[in-house]
Amino acid sequence: MKQPLIFFTVLLASILNVGVSKAQCPGPNLVVNGSFSAGNTGFTSNYHYDTTLHTIIYPYTVGSDAANYNGWSQIYDHTCGCPGGEYLLTNICNFPALECWNEGIPVKRNTYYTLSFWGVSIHNSSQASIIVFFNAAASGQKSVFPDTLGVWRHYTEGWCSGTDTSVYISIVNFNDFNGVGNAFGLDDISFNACCTDSLHTTLTDARCFNDSNGSASITAMGCPGFTYYWTPIGATTAAVTGLKVGNYTVEVDDANNCRIDTTITIASIYPPAVGNACCDTTIGIGHYANLKVSPFIYNDSYVWAPSFGLSCSTCPNTIVTPLANTTYYLTITDSDGCTNRDAITVDVSCGNVFVPEAFSPNGDGQNDVLYVRGDCINTLSFIVFDRWGNKVFETTDKNIGWNGVYKGEAMNTGSYVYYLKASMYDGSAIEKKGNITLVR
Image (cartoon, rainbow, N blue to C red):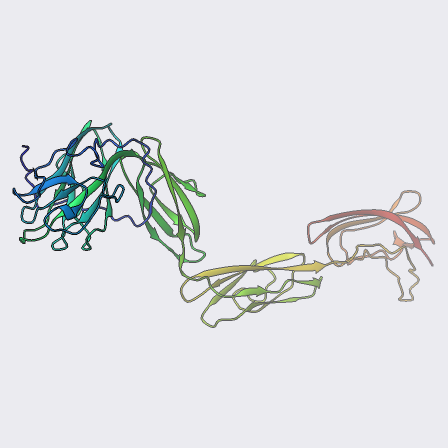
């Protein structure tokens, strides 16, 4: 008979999975007789096999119904829940820290495995407290069996093989001695090679809605050697920073090319600042538009940009006189330091650029000077030629026109040719040529 293990009081704590669990265990069950359908074979125990469950100390047996022993209630196995099923039953009222079930199993290196089993309380006083050991190392905290008789509960433990090529698994009852109860059953024990079992996620929300200071980290349960890929940011580390409010998906691959993924959501601690810029409008050149914020909040700050042409760039309401179509951006910062941004566009209506077809420089004060007409002209070159091709007038100032005089002499009535090249405040360019008539 194999001697009981010597156990220490310091046990390894299991990691609480608060993220996603998507265990994929495609490998076959490596336990020989996990359903106990073959009876008392395929495993070992530090309990004593006793078909009566009461004639020797710390007995166990493989049977179909707890009602067949010690006057207990009827409890069938987990596999079929029927009289013909088999499971392991124990009667260990005062011998804790014994290996109830053991099996040695060959394993692959650097592979993640999951042990799964079902437990039931046969006596409702002092329930069993189970710890699983892999190669004499405790896998986690105690699992207490149900306090309701006949209720089967599922239990799982994960294990990474590392450099090991075999594992000795022990299911151990650690119930403290109190002289009564502590009778339990086991059934449907399985041990399978699995893909990455679960992800533990830690999140930090962004401070403000428009900030990029959220963070997330992923701890994968399984064998080391994980790779990570975050969408849509393309990061390849377990921890990511600089996150905005939104959804992010991380894919985790283990050393055996098994994949698990989860989507996390970054929220904000504070909402964005409140307010909108008002309102899109159209004005004529030289006119002004009123820009304002709605609603106005006293403790918030406001900045308009670009500041050129604004009467006040840090006021909630301001006046602007643009020379061309311009989009103005408003940044609002509230008392929490959170911002919001909005934009409005002021379109400037320029009308047409034209040269009159005729003018009459006769000193009557009516149409005596020929000007280039247009509200949005920035620069120009305006030249007038007589019918023989002589240049009789030239200007680059839209406020200077031709009075019909060339070299100190009044020009005769007749037809003249002009050429105009101009640039506008909105950046566009115009080229025109045509005829004008001088009338005396």
